[in-house]
Image (cartoon, rainbow, N blue to C red; front, side):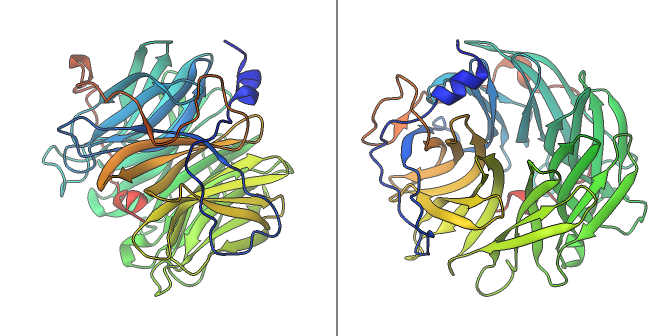
Length: 444
């Protein structure tokens, strides 16, 4: 197997037989990248669907992170795929109702996955939701589950919705219940060692500070988290904060005076600080706009760009590119009957170079974004085909195709998810944190 750098440089291009549709807006003269290949991951006969929420790279390919059977019967879903998205293994973990939201790579073939078990009482009678972490080794043909943990803060109920690797462990971001009431939630950050042991956790000192976090990034001397505050009061405003390596709050910033707005994802800036992608004005008649903001390590906002073409859209992810960034979300096609995975390529100053929907003739939502070494990207989410929703979806945009990816003149499928193995239900006993995560996953 090539090294990660050489393998990623090798990953990418073969025609996918699906022509991408250009979003009806200026692309500033730049050419959009082609869709190289795509794969769908159909659910089993009794399942309601698969959603790919994140992609983690390993020496054997990639691990897809998501959920199988969205709703009261949901369980966490993981799949190992090769460089071209072909299935190597698949697993469903946890008791209903469970989700995986995000993953992070560890040393060698280790992968850490963050999510929630026991969703809110309105969906499950099993009690309060539990922040949930699973550590697995992505072996070539079968994964090895090394450990799993759930966490309890001072009050039960919550969710871990974002995860990042640090020099000596992991950091989680999510939300915790306020006094055990799942309708009011605090932003929550937790630091773990590599074995999942809690080192410290943070929440606002103000007991009335409501909010949820869905994004986390690490800097050389601290942690930056993003999400929104005030959602329980009906006024949701984008919020970003920096936490020191040992827990104290360094600074925080509320983005917008007018509701609604939210930060969905963060990424490092090569020049220092971070960029934050999110959405604002999504309660208005025009369904809002996506934005990207550059923020220095001291909290100074350098610039703020907006992206919209007048139709419904929702931004979800950002990742570095050569001399800029890729953004991913979902955009409604003008006839109102379809949606597509919405990719925007911007320069280092956030100015748009091109944008495009992938693919052109299916109903697709974009959730997962992963950069490749040759400036291509993997994008994932879910796809409806033939009037049937709920296929997990992964595709490559740009770059160079790996051998064996094939030229696809249609949607290529891989085997269905196998039945839940006996060792996976339930995993560890968990104590919980309160959530409000329904807003983080709603169909926007």
